[in-house]
Length: 132
Image 1 (cartoon, rainbow, N blue to C red):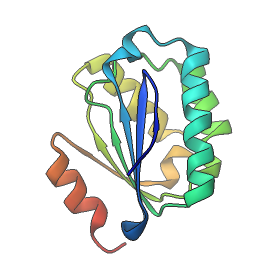
Image 2: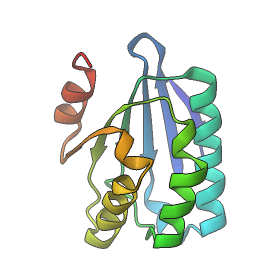
Image 3: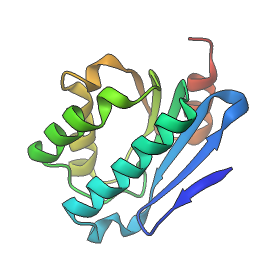
Image 4: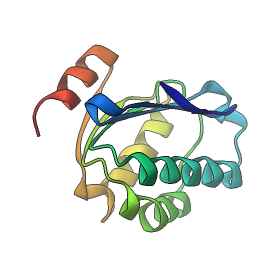
C-alpha cells in the first residue's frame, strides 16, 4: 500500500511482511539537498510509525549525488532511528550515485544494517524476506 508519494520519492508499506519499500524517482535529478532532507525526514516519520523490520530501497532511477556532507547528515540524523535491520538495495544505473549510496552505508550508522545490493526486484525481495 502506498502511504507517501512526492515528485522524488514513493513509499509503500506491507504491514503483514514488516516491510517498507522506498522508491527514489527520476526527478531526483533536480532535487536539492533541502528536498533530500525533507524526503528522508518524511521517510523517518513513516518508519517510526510502522517500525518495519525489513526494507527494500529502490535507487534504480535515482539521479541525486550524495556528497560526503549528505552522507554525514543521513548517518547522524536518520539512520539511528530506522528500525529495518535487513535492507535490500536495487542499485542505481548512475555509477557516481551508486558510489555515494555505498559510501553512506559504510559509515558508522549505516554499517549496522544487514545490506545486500541487487540489480532486480525479484532477487532483492527474495533475500529481504528470508528469515533474519
